[in-house]
Length: 257
Image 1 (cartoon, rainbow, N blue to C red):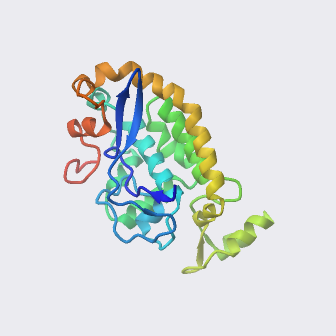
Image 2: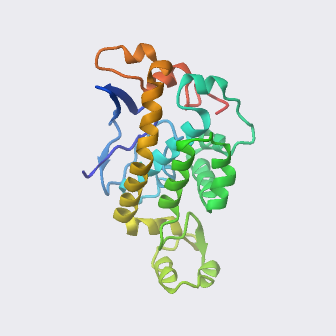
Image 3: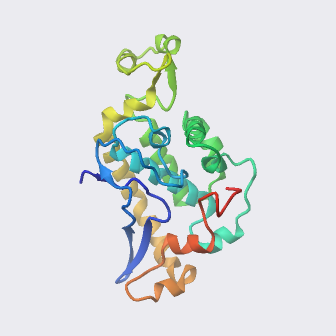
């Protein structure tokens, strides 16, 4: 499939009962586009958008943009909770860095995400440390490593010529050198576009490893978390339903978020 969703969020993913199991449904394709397109129109909420999308960098869209949005969704749900009971008991720490993903301009949010994803230590300290124990916490770390630490890439940093000269790996230095220079720096994050298929394969394997645990939790909790949704014909509990009760994103609904 060469169609990208472009607006993955908790509103766009629905959970539906099918026989004796729960299945996911992806909805809301208003911002869908083809792989390689440069998209000017952006969703109103910036919470789940990829770094390149926030920066409107002109980089052609790749499947990694949607994958990055799914990663941010895992971080958000793993922190604030996946249902109304978990969110009702949640008390935010004002120092939580994840709150910065919905404050200010797109450029400011992109800068914050670059900082939080710059190293594994930064991600663990700034984001994962505040997530609930459980499968989403582990999933987020595995997804982070696949998206931002793939072999042959150099994280989310912008590399100056001086920093480039200090890179000891000859192949990596050559790949960085080949990137366009903008205002005296090269964007190391662009290197991952050389490995799109490999990264997507890794992500699919990661999701498959975590799937059984996640489905067991969803199947065991469906009756208690949203009984009115589960009884509607053809419908099951949805993240959108939970969000209607406790909104996640959007400055008009959660100005403190």
